[in-house]
Amino acid sequence: MPSRRSRSEQERAEARRRSRYASQGKEPLPGDEPRADAKAPAPAAQPGLFSRIFPPAPPLPGKGDPLAGFRYTGRFPGIAAGAWLLAHHPLAWGVPAVGWAVLQLALFLVSRQNIAAFAITLAQYALLIGSGWVGWWRPWLFGAAAGVFGTFLYALIAGIVTFQSGEGSTVALGIIGSLSALTLLYGLVGAFAGFYGGYLRRRMAPPQPTKGKRR
Image 1: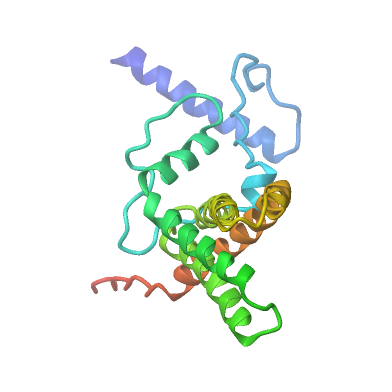
Image 2: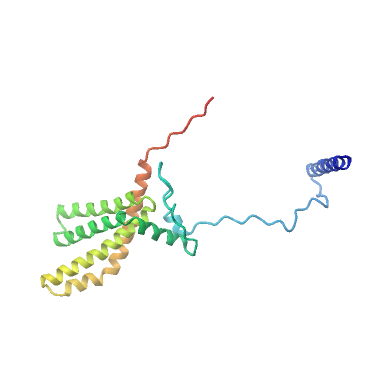
């Protein structure tokens, strides 16, 4: 007991002396230097440029974690998580893609300088926005998937209709030749439209009531 008490008293005296030296601005004592073997905390991983431009949507009030069943631990987790979400929610981007392709085919058949063409274009944008609204887990990804898949589906339907109509393969080859440009264009349009749809849903979501502190 006496040895333990004397040791604690020495430690308190040493702590008071160190604080006194520190308040006077003097050099630290020989035992005050930080240990060389102390590891500095690892810096937090910074999000990439793509994640900064298109950040994943946070969970809506009352909704759970969208990646609750995601167990992938390999490389490129962001790409794997996006593919996992698309595979587990195909209707959120597949239905808007089919509707977009049908409307694009109707837009190809009607005159462009027509109020019907304007209404069809608005309906296409509404479908892409709706894909981001429904796929709130990662709305820009669902909008881009709807735009890309809709472009491929439109090219397929247009090619089949052209060959069956007997008009020759010129129109079909032109559509297939411009498929890469259309895919890039409507993929970007779908990404921004879907992001806007998810943003609208998050903004229009009712806020969670805050529980007041009991007095």
